[in-house]
Amino acid sequence: MPLGGFFVYQGDLNFYILVIFGLIGTVLGALPWYFLGRFLNEKKLANFVENKGKFLGITSKDLNKSKLWFDKYGVSLVFWGRLIPGIRTLISVPAGIELMPLRKFLLWTTLGSLIWVFLLSLLGYLFGENYRIIETYIDNLKIFIKPLFIIFLLFLIFKYLKNIKNIS
Image 1 (spheres, rainbow, N blue to C red):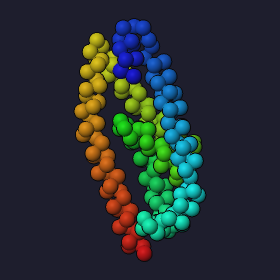
Image 2 (cartoon, rainbow, N blue to C red; image 1 turned 90 degrees about the vertical axis):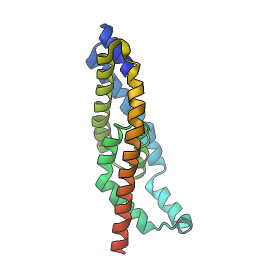
Image 3 (cartoon, rainbow, N blue to C red; image 1 turned 180 degrees about the vertical axis):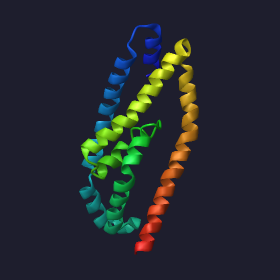
Image 4 (tube, helix red, strand yellow; image 1 turned 90 degrees about the horizontal axis):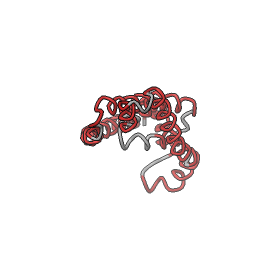
């Protein structure tokens, strides 16, 4: 997207067309990962947990609670996950596993991706000839944001596990 923004800077490309097609490509790229999650669906996961879960310390009750947890936080995870390099693609898999409705998945994926595509395109335009510098900034941003996101996910998991213990 920064390279596309550079072409906008040079006058060779329209900014809005770049964003629209970048968004379409990003959303279409998320779909195979979502459907992979659907293929590894909750039913298959439930069968696995039923047969092998005791070896992992997981019960079908835990699986049901995880579904409730994803139902509660899944929209936020899908939306905000689109803004984090490295997480952007992977967040589609749990959405599919938890059978997040496709329309809901597409809506939140599209909104989160729109921000990402727009910002990268804009940065490519603003940096002009120096658009390659953006990659350095994004790499530095990943080093900072990924751990924060992982800490946030761990916090949510810890909170979820604490709620399970309180309910049991």
